[in-house]
Amino acid sequence: MDIQAKQRELLMKMLQTDDSSLTWKVLIFDRRSMRILGSLFHVQQLQKLGVTVMMKLDDARERIEDTPAVYLLEPTPENVSRIARDCKAALYDKVYLNFCSPISRVLMGDLAKQTLDKGAFKSIAKVYDQYCDFVCLDRQLVSLDMKNSFLRLTRPKSDQALMTYVDRIVDSLFSVFVTLQQVPIIRASPGNAAALAAQRLHAKFREHLLSRNHLFSGGIQSYKRPLVILLDRNMDLSVPLHHPWTYCSLVNDIFSINANKVEIPVEENGTTTKKSYDLSSEDQFWDEYQGAAFPQVAEGVQKYLNEYNARYKELKREGVDISDLKDTVNSMPELMRKKRTIDAHTNIATALLKQLKDRQWDRYFELEEELINNMPPSEEDMMEQLKPEAKGTPTDKLRLYLIYSLLHNVSSEQAAEMEEILQGYANDQENPLNLSALAFLRTHKMEQKFTAGLLETKKKDSSQGQGPRSLFTIISDTVGARGKKLLQGVRNLVPTDKSLPTTKLVEALMDNKERKSTARFLYYDPKLLQVNGPVTGSRRITTPFTEGFVFVMGGGNYVEHQNLQDYAKRASNAQTKVSIAYGSTEILSGTQFLKQLSALGKPPTGADVDTMLD
Image (cartoon, rainbow, N blue to C red; front, side):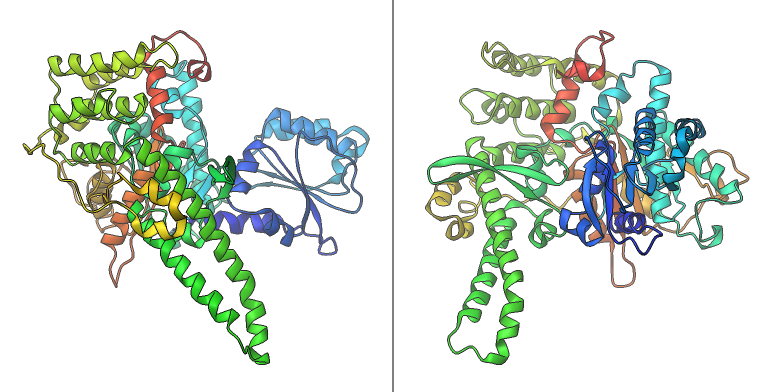
């Protein structure tokens, strides 16, 4: 289930205008479509597709003769008005309008009215609904890029605001499956926003399948049947707060990945500057190691460096035969790309290592892993890590305590003692810690019983070994003396090969056998056109699923995405390949999720969601 490849293929076709005599074209986009395109194409790739000029819709633009314009936009009244102004000004001889999601009849009518003047409508060659309103961050990772989604779903302004928000999510999910040309089985956790989304998604599929000219060209009988699983973020608040240990999750948590780009502080000649790097599946190193534990990343950098050095020496060897000259010339671009990749990931790894050491990140990861694996650390270990003497930011300590409180029975005395330490950080006049998330947590624990099964723990000796030798000595040859200093004090830890709560649910639902954990999950089959609601009994499919799309309402994270990929690898064999895609309303770091929890911990004021986060 390579969603990214399917979406890229769709938009490549969009750029192929029907006038073969006009090779070159102008591409016009808005903020939303810029995010979509940016996750799929580099500038050079668009140029190869004939795009000579790329401009934002709101930019000041002049007339370009004999060149068609391809627009990719959200269908909004503002965008429609701007299109009409472009047509009236005759900026382009031909205009191909593409909308990320279907344009309504009302807006189409507005466009027609606004382009009647002086025959401006004649420049509009075609109008398409592209059903591409989602952002593919990787082959099997989708974000709807809907900011502050947990806050908006948990505390909507009104019932109508919630319904409108859920409908936006449903429209984007429907676009994913139109792109894949698949009609899924739908399962959803009951009694929450996920259940509402499942009901409305099912209704949307039925509406289209009942129409004569529906969007699924293969015919009902030929559909593949993947399983889409809609989950609510409230089912597990601990993993989004977790200090991760895999490469991609670390980069996002510490430096924030934005549209597959990250800015890293790099020290050169005694000064620190910021460098921006693209992180996508086209980066071979990133594609191979993004889900790896950090020790394996260090080994990967050394492996790539050794391969580069060996190839470089081979090309530089004396007495190169004239017949080998062509091969040498052809090899140089690839070799230089590999060198840039090594340099980029060496810089990223070095910057990460400094943060890991300065914040004693490995200790937070270790304590939280114990909690998530039902083996909580002792109260003494927790108290020691929360105190000011322990390394880490106040936010690191708050995240650790929130996970401890979520997954462990904390007595009122313990809670008071630990929160007193946190209160000391809140009283800091220069940089006070926001403790509002604690209030939300108390309310959440009273309302939610989902984690009850996680609270049966094994008594564990709190004494901790020192672990293996100092972490990442293998990378020190790559990063030099500066890197060796950073490596001290960081231990070689590897995440346990266990399923997170989300993955456990997915395993049970993909296996398609009734279990206690999934018995109450809703089941919809849009293919059963005569059934307008959840399906029960013998009409359900009983065989296990091999393709799944897990979607979390209210914010996802790279940790869950990677855990699902690990499960898919374990479940696959020589005869059957299991494929799991992951998506969410937005992809968050631990700090970003904490910010939304903090906003929810404050009393409702009627203010806009975004204002609450300021």
